[in-house]
Image (tube, rainbow, N blue to C red; front, side, top):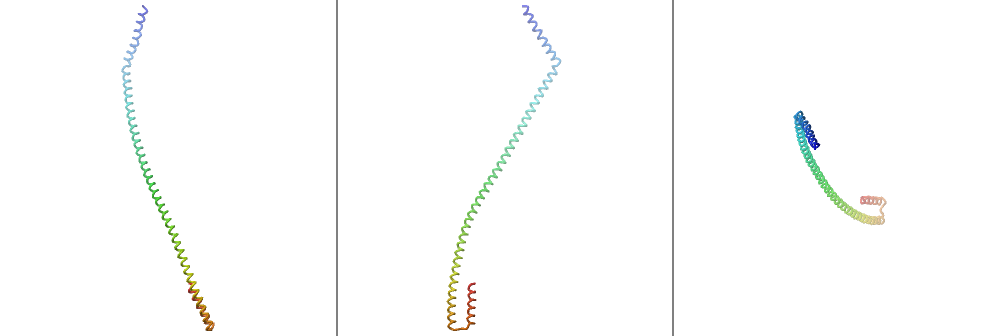
Amino acid sequence: MPNNKTAKKSEPQDESPINELDQLRQIVFGVAEQQLKKQIALTRSDLEQALNTQNISITNRLDKMQENFTQQFADVEQRIQHLDKTHDENELVIQKDLASLASEHEMFATATQQDFKAMEQALDSGSQTLSHNFNEQLDQLKTHLESVSKELSSSKTDRKTLAKLLATMATNLEDDEL
């Protein structure tokens, strides 16, 4: 048993030098250690507060940026919709104008064809009338010339009178042709 007693006595002796060393450290460095711990805790608290403040600031900035982007996107979307609507309206106007112009062109072409047919008929009618009148006058002139010629041959008029009469008839024919 003596070995057990020695083992028990040696354990408390081992603890006491560590406790004594801790006590000495506490006495010599205790105040500085406490101040250092307080300073570390204060620095940590300040750092956490600064980080929280910075986090709130960044979050606010991000929220404002997001809000600004959303507003700008909405403005751009509204402008695009307005331009799209204007483009659609312009396209409808152009299509209506095109349809109207096509209709007017068709009506103009039809009216022009009718006018050409009417002018052609009028010209044909006028030329037939002129041809008929000219033929009638030519027949009348031939008849008159034959009668004058018979009269001249029966009355035996001199050549001068005959030449004057022929010259007068030629002048009348020229006047009739004009």
